[in-house]
Picture 1 (cartoon, rainbow, N blue to C red):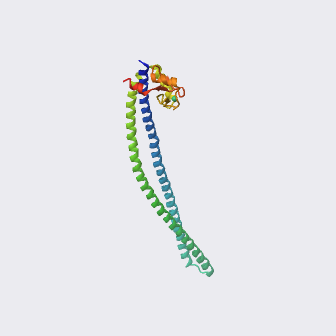
Picture 2 (spheres, helix red, strand yellow):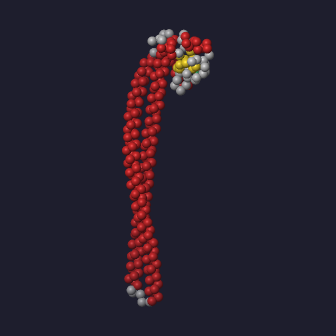
Picture 3 (spheres, rainbow, N blue to C red):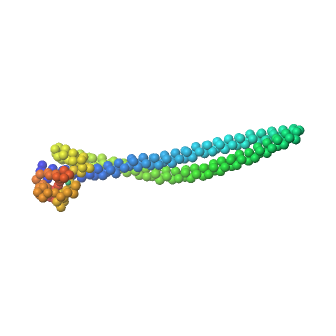
Length: 242
Ligand SMILES: [Zn+2]
């Protein structure tokens, strides 16, 4: 195999690897977004759960106030019937004043009950709104989730296909160059083979010394960039190979 042929095999492999890299990048983002969607829905659900707890508390304190009120009214009724049996004017007046004070206190409890009922109504409205919002969000995110899942599937299928092509391209590269390629690729964000254009390395964009440039153009040996150490090729020379 000539150097140019070996180089050509490396370029083919590199092109596939770049496509796989990009597909992988697209695919990687999907699980994070899916997780975000789950979190967003979970947060809304938990806010609704808190509202519902608050509702329970409001209902409970309303019931307690109502039971207090019933007990107080019962007590007043008893006092009122006792009032008829009292002979002493002074005792009568004292109990009357107690009854009056108790009635006033009951008005306060009734106000509190009304306030709780208003709070309950307000909370019910807010819960209904939250439920409505959640339902539409669930619909929206559900659609996005479905789309993401199908995208994930198609990306995986494309990656598998590229992998199969890669295996074939890999077998056309000799082991020594493959090891070199793999090592550079790992250190240079996945790009180990780059074009030389206008006397510049297209990987690091540094100018190539003239002598090296001429060697790359001739393609008698596989050369690497003195700055980024990537493998260099001259596109026209490879195109002429076909
Ligand atoms: Zn370079």
